[in-house]
Image 1: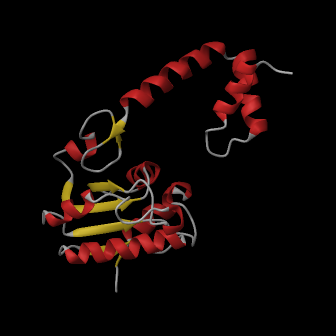
Image 2 (image 1 turned 180 degrees about the vertical axis):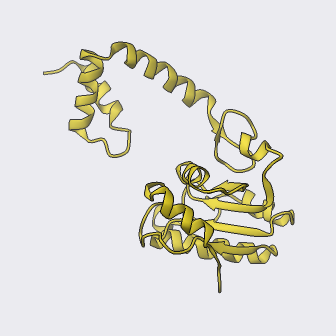
Length: 198
């Protein structure tokens, strides 16, 4: 029978996505057997990150400051706003394309079964569009059922505020997640995006 503290450590690793009991047990044993210094460093950085990293007040991406470096940059095209589901999607687009506009991170997608509606995705996007600065809303949601429903909602929202909605083009697999698409495919899909129709 293992110690209660070891059981707590194993269960703590299970909060990570895709980590089941066996993997969590392997991680815990590794830290205790060979990686105590790394474990201390991980614990320290994790505690600090959880405490200090919040969300940018403009785009909702992760940030240690009120406004992230992308939103604060004077070199970005403020007429283009790319809407993504997660910070991982924003990073994928930023590293795979030459996009120089701004972002809005939904931190999810419409999912009525999970209780996520337009209100939960953030009303700040409507306020940004109402400002009139955005002329193109690039919808970069996944091609899952929920992602498509979210894209439709975002296109309607853009039109209501006089912005042209566009959608990433060919090359993205149906039902795929942006963060797992290779750079070349994502770059091509981003570059050949098309205007969204009703």
